[in-house]
Length: 256
Image (cartoon, rainbow, N blue to C red; front, top):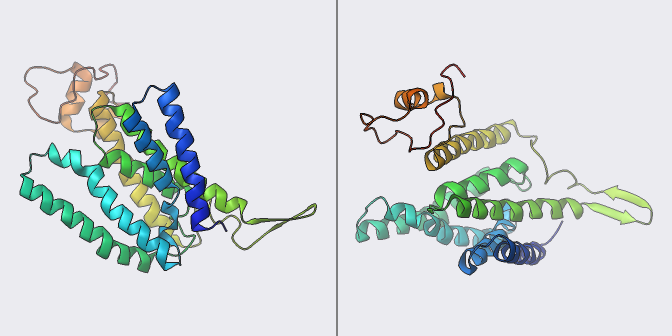
């Protein structure tokens, strides 16, 4: 099994490459590219939240307690909270993650459980996408992929370290297959993980539809106002805030 420092070094190197390529070839500015590199590094450490070792867990939850309020800062600013309310909300986020959620997570999770999995990687990426609000959808997707790339690097490195090479003989140790997986022996853990993933996917798709004006889910799954707009196009009488912005695909059939 790779060590905490090994994962940190590997994900930091990967983040340097990811951020550099984004700046050089995808025309992202320096700040966004650096943030992508940092998110890749953090993503490479996230699976260790279920570690049996105390030090990495404390460090990671302390980092998460700082980063989550920063990710939701712009979304909260757009909600027109007062400065005092914003400060109180951010402090509450920090205390909840650092002292409450961390204890609940450590009590319910096991090392190499469902958080050490592909669904866990998708949950991390969707969380960043939903929390970080930016006018550019491209930036949000860039950062969510950064976290998932770092997360996946951790899983792959764990699997590589579970293979013992002895001459021409390849021997798998007890941790083989416990990182890059879709299910775990725990039915409760697997079910809970997929419920969280499905909920985040639903909100992620709805957010993407509102941002781009393109419907992905069947029209009949949407609010009645959305259904009318999808068939007839937006009208001046549609004053409901849930009405999609101009550009919505109006060719889709209600029975689709």
